[in-house]
Length: 322
Ligand SMILES: N[C@@H](CCC[C@H](N)C(=O)O)C(=O)O
Image (tube, helix red, strand yellow):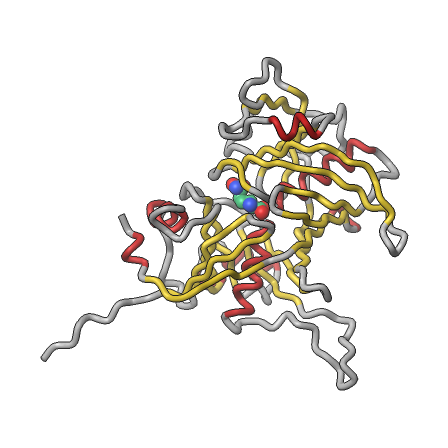
């Protein structure tokens, strides 16, 4: 008697970082490249698993970007293949890269817990996961409180600009506004346009069910962050910490409850508008929680926040092929 055909299954998980949620797939053999239809089916909140994006964890050796990634850091043996819910490819995802690290821990590919001494004290040097992305290698470590901190690398003002000039280089109009307002483009490996509003009421009222209109629109579109600066606080260790609220309309998704690269762009824009003396550390309140953004030496930026794996199992990708 012939055996029934064996189904080829893929390990998956559902995870989120401040409620920016993802379908995660483990493609350890590099044989599960996804097309846009499969991504849309997996991300579908009714007929799929549901998520703002789909993340494929794959050995860097199997992706077209491998030479560039491994030249930057030979330790970046795992690659985050990130897709937006609409099937489009994105260069980078700040919440996603933290959840990717949590998924790699679950799969037993990495141990990010600081090694403990016999007396229970942890050593100073944290373990780090180097993650290949389309926006370069990102280094993720785990903080004592369980948050994941990512060195997101350098950020840019697009067009090779180094100075802020007038502080604005774009204009954004949200649905229902008569007049566009001045905004600033910030490049975190993926494109962002940040607009400051004076009052939280205006932030709450903004209609993000439609994509805001951005002029000039970058060639590959943009994520749009609406922010309200909330001032500065002094933390327990005496550090001056800036605080802001943010809502985001993500390219390829729509309004999401959080965006890590967007939080970095928002904090960096508000810090730049604040001029010299503006804090280096910012808490960014998003609908899904709070993340921390730190401007590092050398024009780099760190993003820290939670990463949760909610459930997981095995799936048959054929069921998500339309
Ligand atoms: N939510 C992500 C960003 C995901 C990609 C974005 N939609 C784009 O197209 O650039 C984050 O946490 O950074």
